[in-house]
Image (cartoon, helix red, strand yellow):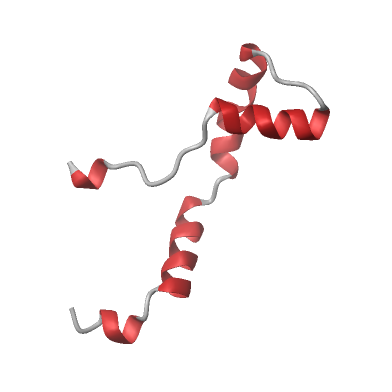
Length: 65
């Protein structure tokens, strides 16, 4: 079950905050549905994870485990 724990997620509130800042209004439920898949496609999760590992993990120390 530990492997199924969510590390990061986006909420409707996150989307509405950006919408309000970018277009000075909140999105309707229909508009949010329209952009959900596009948002997911734009998140390059593999590179984000790989970059974070390379930035934060000392590979010399980690190789001893």
